[in-house]
Amino acid sequence: MSEKRTVVTPPGATERRFFTPSSPWRSWWDSERLNDPRLMLRVWVISRVVLFLEWAAMLFTLGDTRYYYENISTMDLYGPEATMIEYPTPVLWLLKLPDLFSFGHRWAYVAAFFLLMFLVDALFSWTLWREGGRLRGKAIAFWSAFVPLVGTTAYLRYDILTAVLAGWALLLLRKHRPTAAGAMVGIGAALKLWPALLWPALFAGTPREVNRRNRRWTTIGFWGAGCGLALASLLWAGWDRLVSPLGWQGHRGLQIESVWASIPMIGRLVDPHSYWVAVSDFNAWEISGPGTDAFQQASTVATAIGLLGAVAAYVVWVRRPEQRLIEGAALMLLVVYVMIVTNKTFSPQYIIWVGGPLAAGWAMASEGVRGSHQARCDEHHLAEISEWTLLVSLLTQVIYPIGYASLVGHRPGMIAATGVLVARNLLLCWTLYVVCAWIWSFLFPRDEPQGLDPAS
Image (tube, rainbow, N blue to C red; front, top):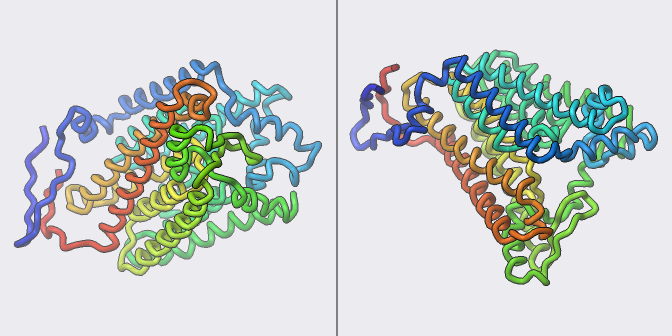
């Protein structure tokens, strides 16, 4: 049973309570059982068995690995400058690794790729437990649930690696290894571009002299790794191939899964003859019809505003007297959710990006003084964001791959699939709001209770 805690508040202040167990789920979540290594190992193993059974139930679907294999196996013929130009050049080196064990067989390539992503997942899970501090059980519990809720997409695309690199960067910063932390984000940027926006989130650390050292060495690590890979890419495949992913993304249309496509997708249900859903030249299902151009333009404006907002949050944060590690994790979540919600495109693997920083965020929260108002506030926001993220991940899997044929109109059930899509997109917007509210709470704090809970 939990002990009754007393918070001393100044006159006029309102007492706030977090984590009042109101259900068996919350009671289990707040229990010390989460720090039992044997229990959490069983939870993790069972969750990965579930993921494998999902893959088996889908008859070992190939996902994007078929596309990877077909392009990597012919790269020697066409050259790297003409191979998968939508991806940064270092991705070709990554995708070549499973090919070394495929012996020219597609299924062997798929198995090797699946195993490689599994090993990345297992290594990240181990580091979460090892470096997660007093909240490591919650970090593992979230990550154990998150990956199977994302579904087979987690292992059939390489985005889990970029998510894990962001999580590792936070864990390395907590271990006072800022250069390696910066390098993790630099490598992530070389593989997927967007992690470059996470670099300022590593400007954290206390006391102040540690913070100044972290800023210097994370910058060196980030630019050293990023520029080194960019130079190697330039020498290997040339300038046009180096910048091709930027042009590719800029010319894409309104993807049916994006937040901005929600209203046109509803419009398709009402007037199916006015809207057209088809695969574009960019290997994505896009929608066209009345208003889609306007929504696409609105997405561009929203992306610019969202990124400016993230930059403003970084600036205000860096100018404050203290930059805590957990605040850096929160800013990472802000960047990722802004990229997802405001973008004109959305693919199911995007939601994977959130998992790494969010799981590592629990380790960052371990730095707080246990029982203090600040620590309870951080844990409250992390728990809320984790819950919404898990629900969003589940709905994303329902959309793809489970209901995707219905969503694009190839099978009955389009109304239900569109309803799930709209619900998922609304939850994405709500989760971004929750992240923004958390960041606002520590960038512009109100007068807080001066008394601290006694440590339990």
